Amino acid sequence: MTEQPVTLPRTAWWDMRAGDDPARPHRILLAWPEAPPPPGGFPVLFLTDGNACFATAVDAARARAWRGAAGDIAPALIVGLGHAGDRPFDVPARSRDYTPRIPDAPEGTGGADAFLDFIEGELLPRIERRFPVDRTRLALFGHSFGGLLALHALFTRPRLFRRLVAASPSLWWGGGALMQGAHQFVAVPPAEAADRALLVAVGELEGRENRPNAAERAARRMAGNARDLAALLKDCPSRVDFVEFAGETHGSVLPAAIARALPFALPPPGAPA
Image (cartoon, rainbow, N blue to C red; front, side):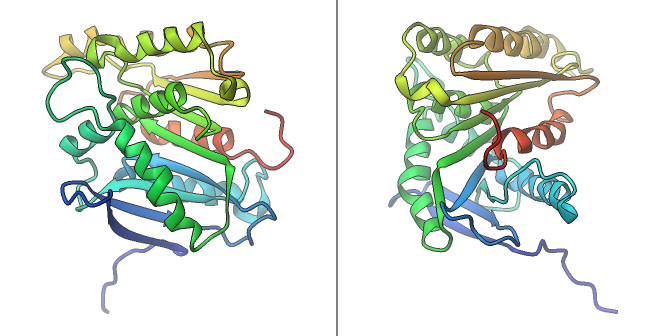
């Protein structure tokens, strides 16, 4: 009996460079539904850390749609935003691509705007050459540093994604720069934020794991900062949901957050905002 690799049906992947920069290779993973595209095109859910998250999200979405039992998510394209290679997490690359540019930032960070430019200006057109896309129904899921990217996208270009999920966002990074951005966003909310929606998720045990750097991790206030952020943004954008997953750590919360994100990010047509 010959062993074969496990594959997911209706999926594909390719490596793609951002512009002409050979130092920024991205692995793109794409899944599409059995259903035909709706008249306006498919909604799209983008996930950071695609190497680690893509299969989980695809399986969870298809489980919800199995025999139409749930009916609470729209048929959609799922796009994993990964990095070239087989590692689930490329730490230097995600530090570069998921963090905004701030004064005195650590070397190798600050590429969030360039990465969002890549998604909007290069990746989306590539996907649209294969599938019709509804650009009014784009969503972004990010975990940890990816959660920073989701928040930065909301604060700086709210027109791009209609729904965003910040799971365990690393709000400690950069001396709390994203919390400062949140205060500025609330003080002068852009008009494009009026119909946007944000889900903030965190694990109950984040910062309480028994690890060698436990004191440092506790000082980051992962759960507390997430609660503070959701409270600050409760009226801007128009919808902010918060969920704290009991018994979950910074790592184990990831699949739980993905499962919760799917109906939030991909509501069926006609669902309330």
